Amino acid sequence: MIVALALATHLSIGPWTGADPKNAITGATKYRLTVTGEPGAHVHLRATGQARGWIAAFCTDRLCSPDQTALDLPASGHADISFELVRDDETAPPKSGLVTIRTDEGAKVTALAP
Image 1 (tube, rainbow, N blue to C red):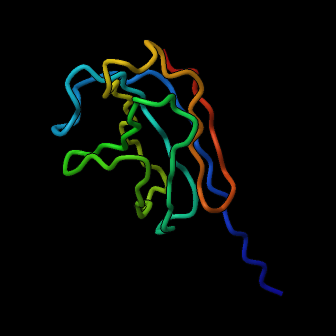
Image 2: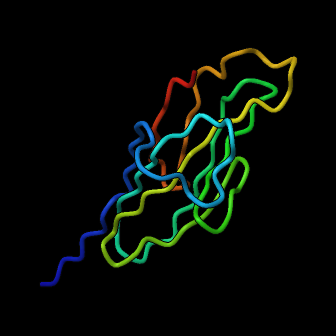
């Protein structure tokens, strides 16, 4: 009998360290979002909960996508991307508060944004 195990997608978030991605947004609060799962899996990410007047962006060296993005996990089953919060409106609250990042498969992580 052959049993195939599908690896669940897992998200974790922490402070961004190291050089900024080429497309990083100046003045943004940056986090390192780590996505792990089955190699080759297509993962759709979306951010919700940021305060009005704040933009959540998923950034790589090629592109920053507001509110949502998709990625294919490499052979390692591990990808790090920059998750950024940008105050886009001068009337917005000074802090964005809680932001939740979810996958379509149900994985989620919540960050308390400054």
